[in-house]
Image (cartoon, rainbow, N blue to C red; front, side, top):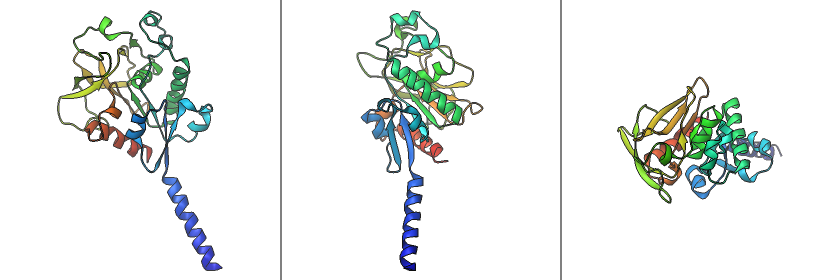
Length: 241
């Protein structure tokens, strides 16, 4: 009987430890590309967009990713002019992602922003957006053309959380017509496209220990891509602390 009890206690301890190793990552709106990028056997991935009780999943969050998607409602950054150049507004998503960002900021939860997610990070921090890049900045760099395109970006600062590559320029993918315009002082630009548009930012550690964002799509760069790997590795290292 004593031997059986020891086995049961050891088994319980083993499975409890195993369970403790599991981390929960919340995607603001999931797709197969994001799931494939960030999945791991020790990670539970939740799609916040399909879950009605957001508070219940925020309590479980070890990390949050604000994903790409529709234009953000310009009223979120007190702009009425951009309403004319935006696509359909997803009010539910704007509200949800603002809540995810605020929670991550207040509770120091690691956060990655991708494309729209980077724009939301800026807007929720008090910044604003260009409503339509070709109209406001020009076409020196094509950021989308009936779909995804590729263009170079230039590193203007260093961040091993995003870029492992020791080079000045990097080719990335792109699929957006809006971008960061006015930025708060605590967001630092790491890379820009050759028309000056911010392509990667990090939040100062004085505000948050781990908030990084990119305008391009690392989830679609392929599993062998160095940026794809580095951002995931950095994120995992942070949520495991």
